[in-house]
Image (cartoon, rainbow, N blue to C red; front, side, top):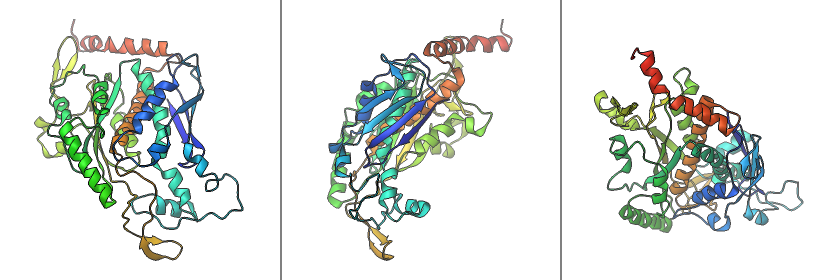
Length: 404
């Protein structure tokens, strides 16, 4: 139903994204998009690039008088650092000789990208495979977030761990065990986690993590970690069990795994469930206030590829960043001899930013499945379709199964 395409290189003129498929007449502003772009740049342990760039998206089309038109929305994010790269990233051939990069970094797309696309300069792999591209994703997905807010669907996240340092108590366990109200808003998570330098919920854990990041900096090393994304207000019925590509958790997993350096995704209790009895995993069904509820939410808000109406819980694992200030062994492609890998300006840890990017990708998938379910060329039509379903499905079930 909805699509977005990003274009641009890390050190090119800028990043462009074109978004299509959203209905008309919902409010959208550059300030809203830029708020989430700023959140992506937060976090202790980020590199020099974050001091150079202050990402601002310019909406070029698809919005008039602060509301969407239903036509494609295009956005542009200027790369301020382009001024220092006009020769190295020139669009046209230049006479000046540019030094080619020939030493790939282990763990990055440097070597595999060069082999796949038959490059003679690793810079061609570096600039498009860079996580700089995710700024365009966050901008595009901010439109999805704003659309979903019309239906009180909220997306939040927090960092669970960095460098193996976990909190004393995991907030998510309270959701799994049904201790958190189903009316909880995920935005509350962001109000808390955004105040932390590393986006954690535990002040004592924050101090330990910052100390470990300082140690990583001293050693010229990097750290990874884990994070959670929570979506609240999601209605029953998004997704399907009919076909493999219509299962919403499959799409969510794909979206989060597509983020740079993410190596693992879980929905609900995920891998832990493989170690338990079924009675310890599945969420008992009850009726309360003329609706279906669950005593727990270990499924993470999804059963059979379809949303249950409970909060969606997704956990991601990000590996340490590939660029090391104390590099490990590699090969020089110009000589085919053993060398130490090259350095490239980079972060020491980017898990806090990764969580915000994951929020964005999750928002995009939820919006896509929402529009597949409820449709509408205008936001008013979508709201009518949404209200018709959500206000009547419980009564339809009682009628279908014979209750008078």
